[in-house]
Length: 152
DNA sequence: GCCAACGTTGGC
DNA sequence: GCCAACGTTGGC
Figure 1: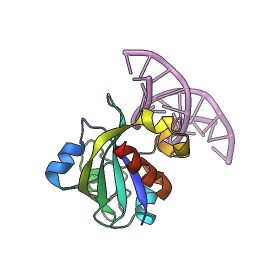
Figure 2: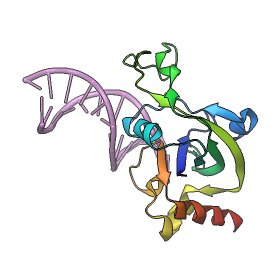
Figure 3: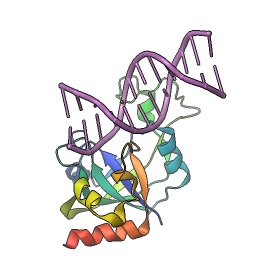
């Protein structure tokens, strides 16, 4: 089982929306590295942090589970959609997505600044300058370390 | 294949 | 809103 950190802008879709909906397609991935990760490495049952980016308090807000295999991101075919991509064809889709399932909200937000303050987490992509991948893999030791921070 | 120009991400 | 970092595009 692998662990992931998945970013989203809370103004578009946030942890409370996922709590309400229970499961949701994680659409809009338009980066090849990220697409390859979900295609090749993501499995049903993997665990993920729900991270809020581009907002007042960037950080980890909740936990979720990967709930489907990768499948074509149909929003790429929709001319009216924000993430329409003329190059993605139905017979050979460029972009993929997975469904995520709500697990729980964290008891307290683990903010980006808190993550940065822990030397043990310095290898995490999310604390590194210029990291723009919307999904990154999290090492097991970092996953467990962060869950302990929640209890403090 | 190089690389300048442009667009996007995302912290601050 | 600013801007650094990075990805993509497209001319050559």
